Image 1: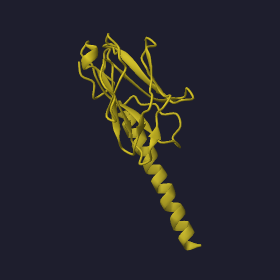
Image 2: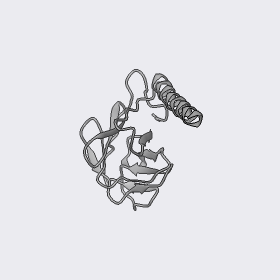
Image 3: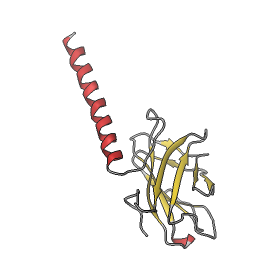
Length: 152
């Protein structure tokens, strides 16, 4: 019985630490809004944009230790430009860059094959799973840049 109580207390402490860590990230200005915390977590990372589609991308990172299949997931902006991911899966803690312009897809880079820049100076990126549920969002621009990795 004593071992169960200790295990229960450790589990509660771990959960509390996770909640506090998430609150700290939100308070620090990270605009991520995850919906389902029981699934493998994929986060939107820094956006690199300079007005040229060939030099523009956003990073997606699997922050969990489990693999996640992104087939059918979509990435969109405020203007409703949308890109459906095909044949993309991430191992635990792996990232992929989603480029706006043209190129050859690899396990590290995928391309939307767009001629024009998608990400505006003030914008919001939304990542949805294959069921249309919001997995993560990141916003930047305006008076305050809410995305620490954003480059102008």
